[in-house]
Length: 620
Ligand code: BES
Ligand code: ZN
Image (tube, rainbow, N blue to C red; front, side, top):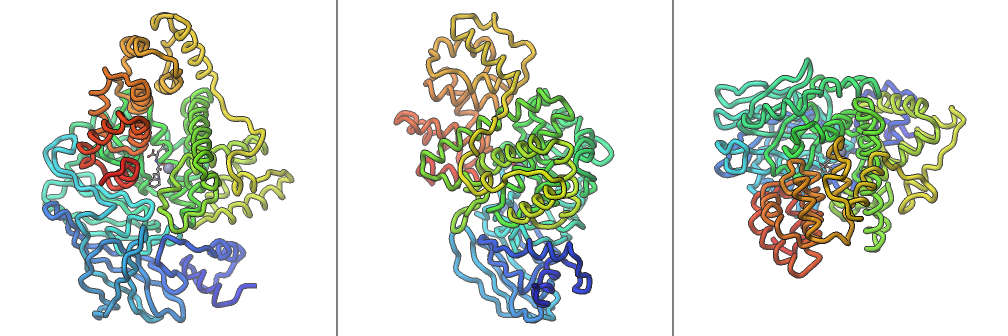
């Protein structure tokens, strides 16, 4: 039984009126009964439905001064609006135009400071005047030297998971969606881009207006400012990059339109109008970030041979899994990432073939098995559950192979059990039915079980979701093409020369598997011989290079140390940094080297990378 009050509260959150109670809405109300432990927001009382943001970007002081006008939807007894903030300096708050006394609570670890603003049920708008701090965790301010063109400064944001609050006072919870407009002033000559409708040319006066009509959660708020140019790749897609990388970027991503079409053929229409890519300077801490309409990407995917474009397939797939149907809390993160890895591989299978996507599947399985082992050994078996408990922890702790690859394997197993056709049918209707809504793990289970009943099939989700490790007896994906790589490596270790190995048709995935599989017993003479023949140290493919550098550290292969240092100083992608530094700190000598390099490299890294690495390397 639902009380009228509860129903109405739900409707507030879902932005529909109380009169339109339907079965779907009741279902969505059930989904809404969850608590996000990483926000101060109290959506039962008041939710933000729209943000109007006016901001000036100041590279000198590394601050943004801004005004955020928040449009609210309130419950009948609303008395306060609770916002998330982190290190913001707030000068004034207005409630429907009148200045008001607000309270900014003491900062708590991870969450930041709650901003409490008194309101009434009739309050329409709250205005916050504020500025960010130079150390704002979402923001990275780059000097010209840290960019590709080296002429002008650059700024970018990374809001996921809970860093949006360090640049906008907002309800920073994935379950709360709002539309936004923005007016952003930047130094003349620079271009500003957001996760919104974007310009394609530089404005004369440094002022840019943005409009985002599809409601999004705060973690998808994004801004980049730099010396950028645009190249169109098709009717609804294009790429932004600094001038010196724009041509390489356009060539690497020339198949973007067909990727979007492939995705739509799988799981329904692309709902965000345009899909553009922004290639960032190398300090970007992730491979990609699915900011709506404008995926942010690392330049390390510009391998020159399109070999790393599955990363774009991944970020594009988030336009359905994540951006359209959004994890309710960071404990449900696998709903975003596991679905996305599955979807990514389906896109790659469609664009290339099954053999190709099975290499990705095999790499995912390798990663997963290693991660489960490591977590179990460290006594963290609970972190191998799909449904996590991240209370009192940084949601970043949930960014592991579990959400991605165990999540993926679960969906792959469902597909294998019930058949692809049925599963595709489920997924398509799942995205349709839940579009622009939130999803909890429990609601997913309910929806999937309802579907199974209709189809008279069966699948045990609970073991996968609420137990550690992998269910017994499941078959892990393996790749034919990798079996061939294994054969060649065995041949080499048995005495064959590099030129006798059959490597002609190999893609970078085979090479990655090759370098990862180099056995412990390899000698440094052999490493030198392999490097001479296959040019690993010189590799322009950052995945292969990382795999190789880990071997370099493991075997103390000093001829590659210069490249190692150079790579660590000039790349900020955490996925590469953590395993390399991680391998280095296993020995005393390595520890010294790691900390010497880290001292030089740290100024180039974004907060999300230093936050992980500082702990690992005991520094600051
Ligand atoms: N949304 C993630 C990145 C992320 C996750 C940022 C959690 C902050 C917190 C993005 O879609 C992602 O998964 N990126 C991967 C790409 C890869 C799996 C293809 C990355 O950066 O390595
Ligand atoms: Zn992702």
